[in-house]
Image 1 (cartoon, helix red, strand yellow):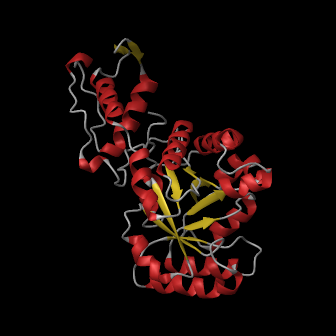
Image 2: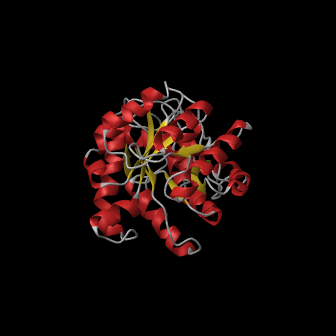
Image 3: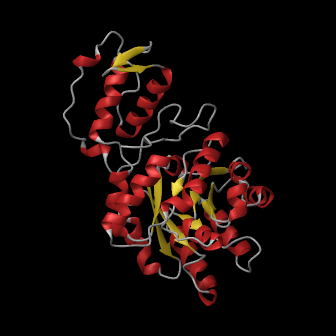
Length: 321
């Protein structure tokens, strides 16, 4: 596992920066994004690929940290991209992820030095989502809504058209025991209403983070994937009711709801143990979220909020407001 493993597990915002623009690397790193992704693929023209790779390697050599989105295996640049990432032990975002054998080879050739973040953005990749997510070395999956929509002949911002694919990726991640996936980009860079709607939709389906293409999107993403004050209050009440089956606000609470409450509170650094014998009616809440609850890396609980049997350090935010 890499130094960024825990951050990959809990990251809400991942900000792309083009590899041929090294003048933006430091700005991206100081933008407030949970993770920076240096893009050597779609953002970079063919004639700039080698220069972009050199830019990334030089910046990483200074001790900076980032994910590197390599070019797809089989392209003229992929081998050199992977080698550069492996030299610095940084995570690799694998585009067009659809073949478990190819992904296993990527992981093997980095000798475990590079966690894999899969960008699942093809119809075949989506059909094989569970298989690719169970590949050794995979830390998390991300949804490539623009490329997939282009292949399917639908609009990339059509929630209904891509709902099945999004839900399938959430299910595949849970079944594979990896952290909840990262939603795709919102191309309306400065339309906060569109971004907020996209975040709410993705969160409701079970995504816990989002790919970003502009720093202006980061505050909305950090806030949108954080638990609300109402959710925090409800989760505290559930845990205060104790471990045995009980009733809170007129609703039955048993083990699955206790586990969900722990997942809600994990990013907010709340205690993870129930206070036995406390009545739900005695729980108080301020109605606000402490500064440390918003926009920061989630601190994973011992089981991280992933599905039963999942790999550790996977912080799962609640799936809906």
